[in-house]
Image (cartoon, rainbow, N blue to C red; front, side, top):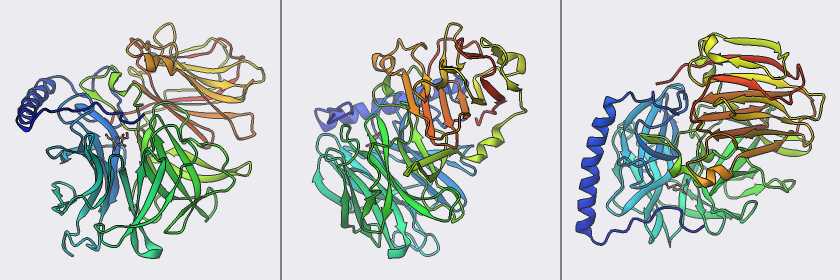
Length: 515
Ligand code: FRU
């Protein structure tokens, strides 16, 4: 897969100008027309996952915590509900749950699109682009010239991210390569310099660079090819995470590989990343199909757990999902830990605890579901939208698949459960509406092994109209998956194959909308 983007071919500059003006005018009209409708009330619209008001989004960009505010920049097409004209959109939050839309941060420049990257708060004005009194926020991103070049560029803001100025000597890091992208920058305190990880997508490599001023970068080392070498490598992220129940820390390096993400646990000494020698298989942070380009927050306070957000979508069908007037949303923010399970380091992820604040009154609670074909009718509990958290446990004594079905359309829905024969947790959207795209239809069933030995498996499921996120046990396995049932009858059903009482400790909390 060389180039996954639709090519924008403009015959000459004048033609390009006309197209740009036309798109701008269409954009204004579209905005006015859509403002009449009720935004965030549309079919399939996630209510507690971030999505832009209108138009396309893909990767989260520049996740940074600065002066008490979490910034979320994101790949955005301000003009259309398809990929193109890549620009950084911007939103801010005080709790990582409720988001305030901010004006477009970094718009595309003539022939250069603004691809993914990082933002840092340059507190000591190491770049000299601000002042001592007004330290700058510095965004480092890939400038993409279609079919010509990708290089790393810089823009800065001295008003807390409201307005941005592109650096006048861009690019700041240029290998004269067609594919070289997605810089992630963080401060490495022991060596007193900034570190950049950036991908050579075709070579399946992450490169590391160092800088004391965010402008001049020196090559340090590279990592890869390793693990998943099929998809192009995109959006690297390197972050230090706590080891569960210990004072120890590990480094985790994540990359995105065209369809799915992978991670490597190891050590980083400020120059080189060394993978844990025991890692023999490809490790995935998410066993579902819709989790991509995940990166972590930079500059969180010392006692803050690491947080990652990803794009809840998949390049294979992202353009085809049946949502309007927006396309694309972000995953729930999740905290990260490392744990050694059966001698191997593994990533644990749990939804951030601030999400609990969205819980309305407990609507349903039962210590075990008695009937094997039970239907829980959400509307009788005052839940009129598929916007809720459902927690339960499975402990099955038979060999039959055990689980529940959410997003029911009357005949079927998204099945979540445990397969005792294979010792796998699974999620299955095969029998939902898949008619809008063949690749989506092909990608229906997802499963992952359960690594803990207990025979009681804990499920925490977030249902948000068209996004289902599942966290298993201690966060050892997660799934993010989209589904678009034509109609939803607002029920949760148990699988006909369940044995009586195998689904236990069920709790359902309706969740408040963040919009
Ligand atoms: C990942 C990605 C990045 C690129 C951006 C373009 O989804 O392909 O590699 O910077 O999207 O929108």
